[in-house]
Length: 265
Image (cartoon, rainbow, N blue to C red; front, side, top):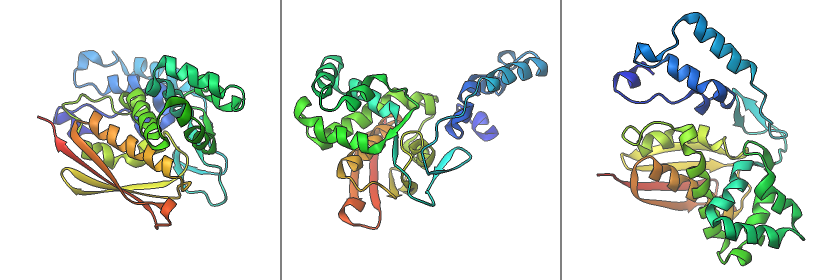
């Protein structure tokens, strides 16, 4: 952290690593400001602000059956129900546009009332069954004139655009794709309860992301590709390409995503 400050880089907020600290992010970042005039006036003032923020914390809902270690989703020891964050469902409107999203909700309202409800009335941090999201990617395409793969990628891009700065508030001058992808495990757990994720840099503009324990659904893999692509774009990468080289849905041992990008000018 001190090295990043000395290099003039922005500090990643603590909630990137621990969701529950989000109410205290601004207090902690202000206390770490390089400019003394921007910090709390006294240690007592800092303690009172921090105490007030921490008292307001409420435990996040946790997916059934999953193990949580330091608020990070770990592989379940038993059978867990895969869950997806509400923000993914809420991002459908951003992906489609308001009018098209309204038409989709009206079309789904009768036979798929639970889906229609999820698109508008779900809290961003709520957990919903991933099967419900898979159902959305199955039934929605005919109503929005997009195939399931394109819709999945569009929703993923919209989800990242809606939430990226919350996770990585640093300026574009200090963000680089390889650093963002190195934190993919923490980022992933903000959106999905399933999957064990790791990343391996190949060189300065290429990283392979490996994932196991997926629901083995091709459209979800397209959602993952869209997520990785948008993460790199918002981190300053150009001409981003995501090659889904192996897939558990095709009975491979793991899903492998080779992410490649060019450097910004």
